[in-house]
Length: 297
Image (cartoon, rainbow, N blue to C red; front, side, top):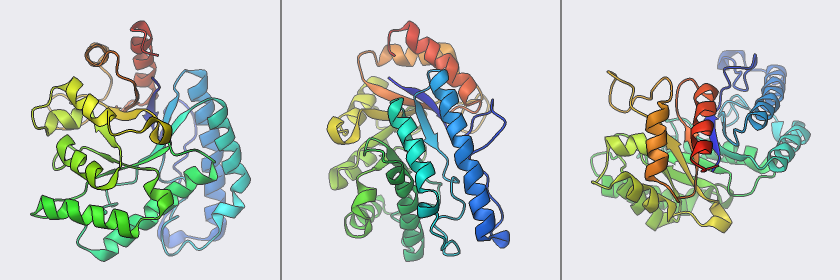
């Protein structure tokens, strides 16, 4: 099991998510910003290795406006060496990497422009993983999208876009995650049956929206959609409900007892766990100790 956290390290004095306003776009600013982001990403990865955190989600903002029409610069070629070096470090230390495009990526939107923008964003993020030379166990994670008053038709529309519009390089990395409002684990299972995409399981979302599956059974259902030689082992997101907040809101800091109970309930199941908890690496370090004590690492 690998345990990690998404995008931002709150201990270090840098960010890999620097960006700027679209109105102030220039190639010079783009080059400067991407250079700073990649330098910080190397520092974050080194911190993670030093602290036993072997799962990390890269920020979508690594290359600002990468999927926007304004950005015509060949940043892929400009930063080719830097991406290769990052990828070599990732592979050398056996890190698991993922990316999770923002909520505006909706493949089943009835709006063709939204779909095309979504595909452009997925192509960008997939190209980052490709430039790093990572195999297809490094994944792109999205949600099912909207139901638009007819979830069956929305699922069919997702499958149609998947098969007829997505490049193979994106399809090889794409995963779908159960969400906290619309797409349950069983809805994602239908998408898997239509596309072959593995399901990234989210325990908190499953608590919000489910069809009665106990937690262990739900993890087993999701894990069965992963082909180890192509996809690696199950990736999952872990969080807990923030007290006195809206349903599905992530907790500020990990409850070590709740995490212990989750690991005990899923004993014997192989997975890599992304902690969607607001204090990031602080909770991830605690989670590693809990998992180590249970012999899960």
